[in-house]
Image (tube, rainbow, N blue to C red; front, top):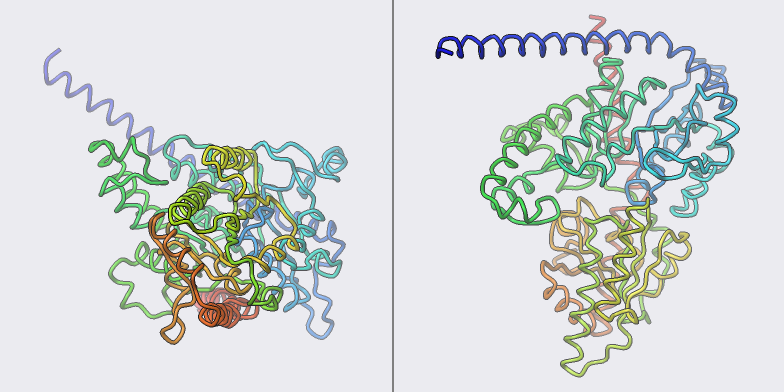
Length: 553
């Protein structure tokens, strides 16, 4: 075949491919548009089902000013995980329920089964009334009662009380597996972005609330919600960005790590290819973030990265009202700040974190091993050294991870010094926090670090990784004096632990007092509720009202 013939053939293929892509795009948009329109029409019927299920009237009970109740939707696929992100969710929900006796809360979650659907059949209702139904991600469903009781046991937030529980409903997200840690073996970010869109589509198809708040940070859900209702106020509480400039820099520098494995970092062409992928993803992610009306972050590190992603160099010149603002997560300081500051078990360390890979529990175990070895060499006591790893296990993947950590403990021969407390009630966590001396946190670039706040409020001396939240927001100096210690490498963690062990009584007590004072003043439930109201809720509602007024004009 001649060159002209080949070129003509390629051109034909290109044109046909372009036509196919264009028509596919048009068809998809048409499908979404039609489905969204049908969903909006059906929403009145579904809304009536929701209130019937809860045993409530759709109109407010305030006779002096009758109006339709507001339904606030929270998008939180892992609401039963028991971590710091879930404390934010439950504290915000309690705040709204107590502030507004007419508001109704809907939580979109992958923890509940089909029985919670407003279109559930009699068979599904019967099978799911006690939970235990197998879910697509391999977990078992739990009931509304179980979730709210666990919320009270873990966080001492009494949403299980009848006056509050009667205004809460859960809707199932069967596609949650698409955002799980292990589902996507390759192109994880892209896969999870797709998964969040699928979940948002599922959520909106079931029910469209009056206000939509994403409390986990699934930014790619926002454009989907906007397709269903372009007027709905969308707010977001972001715990960490899906991608950050730090991640881009690690790939560029070819540094191996949790988000950049050694197979990629060792290869120049793979690193370059991944860098292109990351840059394209970052651009798309920033556009998805902008779809929300109001964004807040849990700390300075996350806020700075979000502002950089969304606005670039223009961020510094924008007014605060346009930029992402910080709402520190809540900490139950009231149940922690009464613990004695003296006569602690001087060589007992505790960690408090979900058993996820990025929490670096294996690093903690190796630090204990190195600490013991160093003290052995110098003839110092090692019998009193203990590490208690406390945290929640969400699924089978976490369980396997815990078993792996226990195996590592045996291999390093530190089984007499390391123990695990998994899915324990809040009372057990409090008991350990009340007697331990050091709070250990080893996650790199911890977006916030609510565990470090809890350590400080409980009177522990914190030893955390010198990055992100713990370094920038939490264990920062008060009046030029330390409120905790930070370290980068394992050897620095060991050195800092030795320094804490050797503190004099007066110096140790003063540091514990400073740390507790900062935690209570800055990170209490009351401080969170005030910041949530002023920096997220008021801005979100005022923005929605302002937009409606502009449209009328």
